[in-house]
Picture 1 (cartoon, helix red, strand yellow):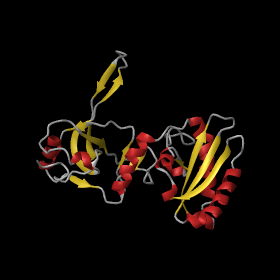
Picture 2: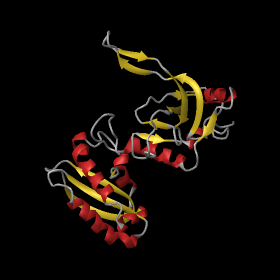
Picture 3: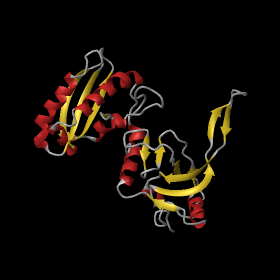
Picture 4: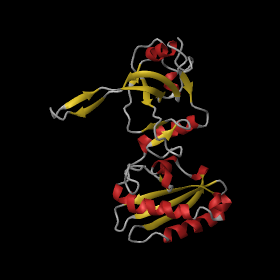
Length: 258
């Protein structure tokens, strides 16, 4: 047995091939679910390497997940917490795109058609893997929270990024509790050096006080190194970075899940 992984197929492998991209829509005339047929020419393998290593190259079972890759209007950041994730400088995937399954035999047939396979670099492959996990595991924040509150927090964080203490902060995460009135929020800074915790907490407290109480009230201010941040906290938090919030085209601010 030769596995797909041994044959060079990895999570993050990009292949150029014209394949069907079909979706289900509601018919405008019939009012019933209908198949909408399309075609796309650029794909990335989203299945995990461990799964690819267990699939024989001659297997005819549709078991490998592909994601369509887009090139028009790419995002400016990597988008690890966004609805779009950059694979290269100009190519990206979208969380809401269809996810067709193909068989290992199909991938090998595509490879025999020509030199149409490449793999994203070793820096962006882990970013793609993390993005795939975050898009499934992170909760959605209601738009009524994101529009006024998350944008204001992100703006204040950006304004105070130039201060010396802020240079010691790798990331600022935010959480929301909408069970109270006004909404409560938490700010957590991710650091490299634990010696910076006290100064960074004070910096975060200043940011929290800069948010109008009508929008939200800070109930938790914290700072810790990456080793002290749990996976659960990362999965339930949102980046206080305006470039990493999900935006609806043409809207005045971020909306929906991050």
